[in-house]
Length: 156
Image 1: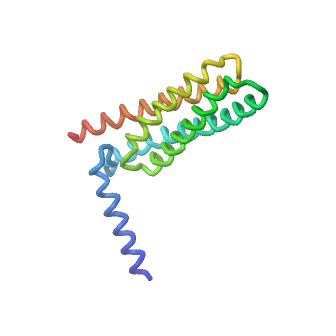
Image 2: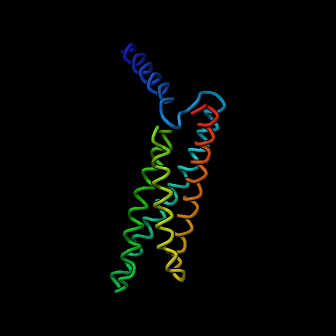
Image 3: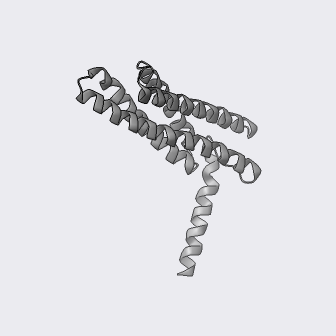
């Protein structure tokens, strides 16, 4: 049984060590910690935005039941944005090799959702969702800048 855990540990170490093949690979040591901190900060903003979008989608559904059909588009954008943000938070938290891809998609989803929610400036729920989308959009943009800078340092 002990050999199994040792072997499993070696497999995990090998897989983690081969992450350098990805565009935003993790480098051991200080740069790893710095990179991981950027990923986690972005993941946290994505998680906050996901919850705001889910809450806003429920609000939009409620508004639609009261005859406000103009909330249909924001209902859909909030649901899709929440899904993007959830996936982004998960992938970035585990420092996945596709963090840059999901970060780009999340940035775009947040930009679109924020734009739709801003069409209802007098609605506090929509305003909060738009603000969360803008913060997440910025966090993703900052993360992509960090990734591109880290890749340039490594000659990629």
